[in-house]
Length: 209
Image 1 (cartoon, rainbow, N blue to C red):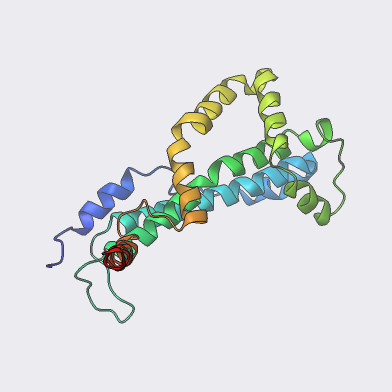
Image 2: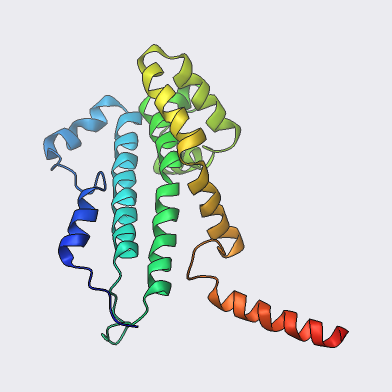
């Protein structure tokens, strides 16, 4: 199989269509003054920066999944890069799938819902970790209910709920398949499985005959 004639301009054009690859420089004075606003806002902002890095990593992985020409560990051009591309695609899916969870954490700390919902106080870093670990399950429903009933977040909540419930549903199912079932849905990851399965079926069929 000959190498694909995909050019770097093709890659750049594809990358240009991915959002949030770059972030403007953050004013260091603004960042240093955030603690004056209390605990919630700086924690939420730090989680926002983590979310941006996660999206940037997902974009990088997706670009490499789109890229058809890859090299081996020894620097040789690969004639068939389907396996490498499928691994990048899996990494992209897993990264993008974390977006919703990060948004919930950002909302929770930005609006200091640890106070209003859970009557918690933050005094140490351990408190932040302990409280963060509890942002799951029914807690997400409480956060969602709060943003739906708060006037300042009403417009955002409608868009976010649509994104969560419909726009990313297929991606979330695929991410779960990758995480829990070894992902047999992505082309390139199932080749060995199919050949092994065919071999087993032939053996089973010959025993019956």
